Length: 76
Image (cartoon, rainbow, N blue to C red; front, side, top):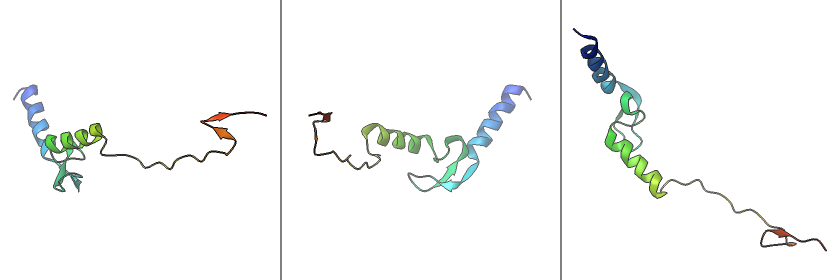
């Protein structure tokens, strides 16, 4: 058996190995090749959600002092 044939067999084996955690998109068992997802489709769904801004970290607005107007600090 040639080296390239063996590499292809290892790649196929690696794609089938489960990660032990469910896919965050569809909850099926994750696959090592697409970790943490189960397939390329779920990985692409997740990427699409990032690109359209579906995932966001909530941020509390900063408090401003009464002396500051439009972010400028004016001295008297």
